[in-house]
Image 1: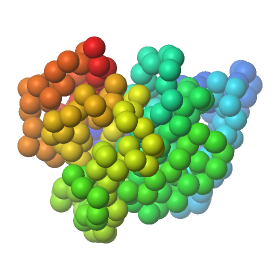
Image 2: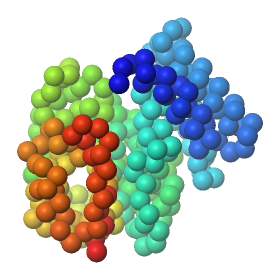
Image 3: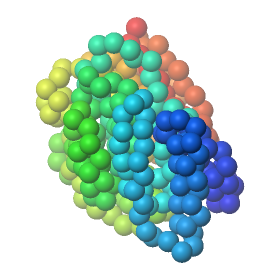
Image 4: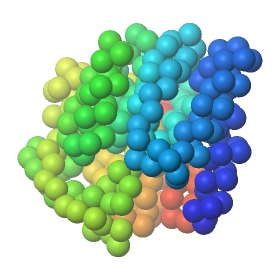
Length: 267
């Protein structure tokens, strides 16, 4: 997809739908739509690089977000319009592990949909993490954790891409920088959350999901999983992953070349 096509899609498709989802009442939705449009236009012109704070409402919960790019709008649309991380868990959800929480978009979605649950929001990169911390102060059930999933507790080199949501342990062509980040294994996350098994694990961690798939005790980690699979960043095939999730009801949806959304719930 070209940059122009991407921008047009965000402007004419995602923005109106996002205004409907994140405002209450017709006039408020129209006002929010024009506010989003103005934001998108000025990102490229007079207000390039400037942040803007939006006031949103979702399922009667009011919150504010300071956004700074077209990508931020697109990310919100993925979560609240396309509902990429929607999962039909209805009762008994007490804890959710959000791996690759970025600046809190998916954590907000879960915090509002599951107000009785604690969302452990994990993000290793300093700039998105600082935004995540600010967001979490508006929700009493989001716990930010600075770090990343790995095979062990310690540190690891993270390659920083030209966009903050493309950071990965894998060195790719769009790398701009390298940093050392904290790492945790699943046992450490369970210790932090004081749980034996998570009710839901969401992941969008650019290939580091391999640390989930290669875990021989995957059934003990969580009763449900939802997240993005990056086959181009791992030495796994879809057949490999299906074997690891034996005993789960499994749905795998293709979203682009070598990229899939996995949804799994324990039978």
